[in-house]
Amino acid sequence: MRAVVVYESMYGNTHRVAEAVGEGLRGACKTDVVSVHDAPLSLLAEADLVVVGGPTHAHGMSHDSTRTAAAEAIAKPDNVLTLDPDAAGDGIREWIAALGTVHGRAAAFDTRVDMSALLSGRASKGIAKQLAHHGFDLIADPESFLVTKETHLEPDEIAHARAWGERLAGLANAG
Image 1 (cartoon, rainbow, N blue to C red):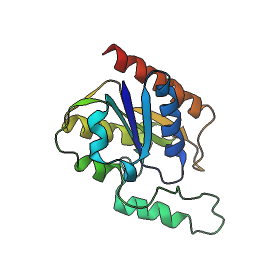
Image 2 (cartoon, rainbow, N blue to C red):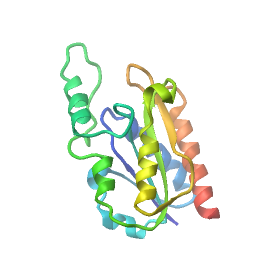
Image 3 (cartoon, rainbow, N blue to C red):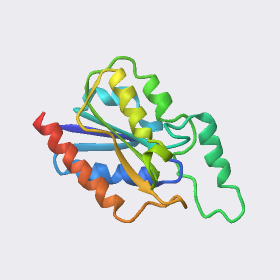
C-alpha cells in the first residue's frame, strides 16, 4: 500500500503533524509526506490513501488573505514565530480545487487553537468536504491537532498524530 500526506503549513505546526502522521503510516505502507507546493496531482495516481491537512484560519481553510496576514504577523515586534519554509504560495484550498474528479481513499486533518471547535472552526471539515466532492471516499472523520494561543503545538500532539497515522493505516488496509 502507498500513502501520500499533503500539507500546508504557515508556522511549522501542521508540517510537524504531517510528518508524525507519515511516521504512523510508515509502519504499514510506503509513505510520502509533501508540502502542497510539492504535490503534483500525478503523485495521487499511485496512492492508495491520500491524507490532506492544513491550518485553521478564520474558522476554516486558509485563503490568500489569511496566509498574507499570517506571514505579516512574523514581522511584528516581539514575534517569536518563524515562517515554515514551505509557507509561500497557494494552499490546500487551491490545490484541492485543481484536482478535478478523482477516486481513492482519503482522510483530512487540521491544526487549530485549543478551544471549542464552535469558536475556532476546523479546516479539516472543509478539507474533508472538498475531498469527498472531488470523488474521494473518506475513511475517517476529520481530525484536529491542537495548538496553544501562542501558536505552539500542545504537548502530546505529535504522539496523537503518530497514533492517528497508525489508525489510518489500519483502516486503509482493512478497507
